[in-house]
Amino acid sequence: VSPDDQKQLTRWATDGATRFIRSQAGKHPFFLYLAHSMPHVPLFCRDEFKGKSGAGLYGDVMMEIDWSVGEVMTALRESGVERDTIVLLSSDNGPWEEFGNHAGKTPFREHKATSFEGGVRSALVVKYPRELKPGTVNDRAFSSIDLHPTLAALTGAPLQEKETDGRNVWPLMRDDAGAENPHRHYFVSTGWDLEAVMTSDGKWKLHLPHRYRDVVHPGHDGERGETRSATIEESLFNLFDDPLEQRNLIAGHPDIANELREAGVRYLKRFSTRSK
Image (cartoon, rainbow, N blue to C red; front, side):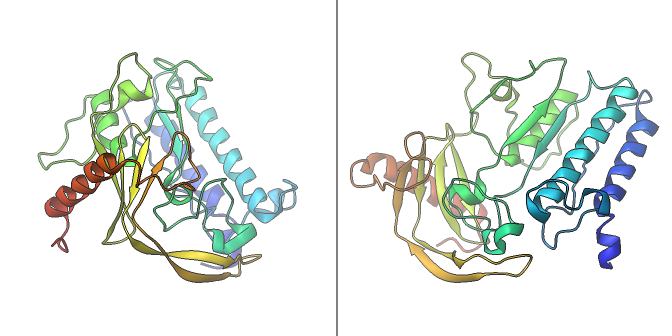
């Protein structure tokens, strides 16, 4: 794909999505998965967005993605299905910080491809006018693995007979009084190795000893920066009080650390070919 082609990727994906919506709306229920290439590096945007954000190329790219979301919402509204359509907007990971100004930024520790909050904590925006009040803020914790069974439950679609890791978390999304997470724990890995276990309420997180890639000098304008191998010892963090994962509390809470450690062992025995 040439650079000129890559400038058009967001528009092409958006045009395809809106055509699909207009062709399906009013006929039967539909599922649309719109996975933009941007803002993954290398970054490109159309000329009409270049230099318009005042926040560099990354900002211009995000400005075009914002335009894309608007086009999708317009297509839903003009097709008469906006009220009955569930729209979810999210990301699969945090910023790739070694690309510097082409990567975005969060206040959390570390970045994409690590098990720290900077790598795995992402916002989720949900719009469903039939059931959700606009402007509601919800800080409940759940995982992207829960989206599939949640949407299946909402739409009445049967799940396959094979066991699904995720669970229906719609009561949590709706912030129902008394709603509890159907999971006890969530597990974080970057590749084959389990690196962290957290309680499903999002409070406690145990990092198992592992190596990760730390950014020494961020890159600039698409050039990759310098990284080094770093290690973390077994560490327990209270994410409610310490979302930046700075204060290791493992010495003061051995019972919580042991619970999460044992949950990790059970997980590995069940799912990993490398468990011992």
